[in-house]
Length: 153
Image (cartoon, rainbow, N blue to C red; front, top):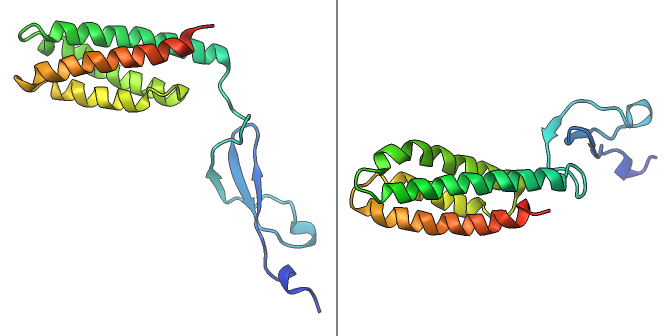
């Protein structure tokens, strides 16, 4: 009589080092053991695999720093009456770019960038917009200090 644990097929999880897919292979016996049978799903790469190089993080940190300088300039121009109608055309896209860079580099600026997106959208409200622009400037300075850490050698 076979062991009861051998009757149940336990999945074998394999992580591809190239594309970070996780293939779940049914356990099986004999020939079936070790064959990939599909069932692919996304997974995070294991620690040390797929990490971003320091040069890439430095370049993205520099790009995020430049983007945030543009955001600050746009918020300052927005403090002029009706100035945000003009500067909002570049501030809103730039805060989204900053959020994406913060997500990619994981340098601790993602939540601040999401708050800056909210501030940029609320800046279109006439009276409340002045307060949100000032808060947006402060948030941008915070993001710039965090991005400066990753843009150094």
